Length: 285
Length: 285
Image (cartoon, rainbow over all chains, first blue to last red; front, top):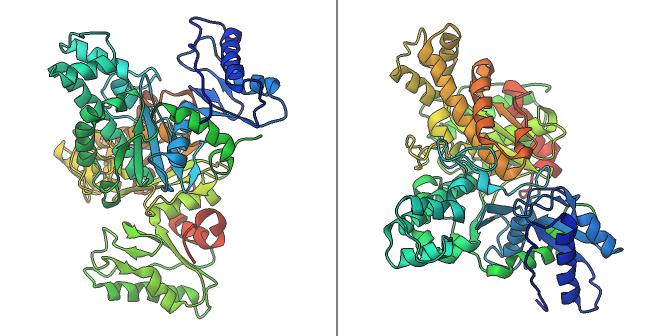
């Protein structure tokens, strides 16, 4: 990676202001150069491959025509856009912990839970560009309501804010902020409720991964996102639940590993959409 | 379909006797003609594409080299073999209820629960040829032990014999045999335990289908196998559970339909492996 930049999402901004902030950081990184192509990973949901995005965490963008607007700004070159968790999966397959595997699941456990799939050496898009939503695998049919409208989804249980809220309900008194990161620090320092929250999250991830691996016969599972930063706390309960539920011989031997690329995975995946479009891009343009 | 034949599996037979029975029915159907190619759907698990099969219901075949033996008998022509539920999925995509869909799940609910997937217009094999084992999606983490070694799998709950046993435990007195078919008859005649068993099975299928559809963004789900013969009993609870758990917009609109090909689906799918190998066969040969 030659250059990178970062800018906060303008709070409560309208769509055009968010786009202006995005273009601002792009111009800064380009320093006058013209890009050969533009690759984008963006929060979902979205209409794909049209690239009209409605990221849950950016209320100003609802059906925002991000791909079309980028094509206006950078005409005559490919502009390709996918879900940010799908981009992470492309990155892990291209250069990370899933390299060399023709069949892989990569997931992100953070504010939400997302993922992407490579099967038969090819990124899976799904009928509407939404394949990889493994955060909505059901892990507890009578579990909590999910923002998707369903019930007992992995995301409803294991996303960072849900685990932190669960820990507080069960007696965790955060020494700092009520975040997954602070909860990890307190769990390592011996807080039993904080530790139980990681057990709960790891177990839910293990169940969901067992369901996906047994359905799809992938040969590796990669876990990234903020919660994977507490791999020391997550790995044990995740692995125990996975092996409790994944009984088929081909599934029992599948490694579930931590992301190999860390925070830059999303950018590497956005690049993969254009640099290795033969594997990772099946939309138009 | 020009000709077909059928022969019972020799009970408690050794591998070579089962194979002789299979060749016998093949010769009978061929009536002296030579086939251009040989396609096979066989119960799993198996080593794929080698075609060394260990079908759970044929104890005489454990690692039996079915594909190699058929190649010996029918040399110089393609011999292709896949899981029988994967063959059914190929058939439903080629000529059945999933025709015209690039992304489809087809499943079989019978003595066991299996399935196959077409994604991006291409049959999914998985890393070891075992993709499609949707019977081992976890639908109740604290549910019954599964023959796979896991717990709470769809198959452990919804396979015909498990549902019939559950119904008997809950007060069903079979008017005939203790089979899913007799249970359907008694449920239609008003037996409450028999009816509850179909509620239980439909609910488990609906939860598993929600998990798979949300992960993979398929645009249709096809259900076949003996239990789908009681679609009038299964459809309501299946659909209710599906819609309780499939909250994402792209998933809510996915139709879950009954198999369009009925009992011949397996044979049509075996033919698809050789007639439409461009879509349905990615092994050697």
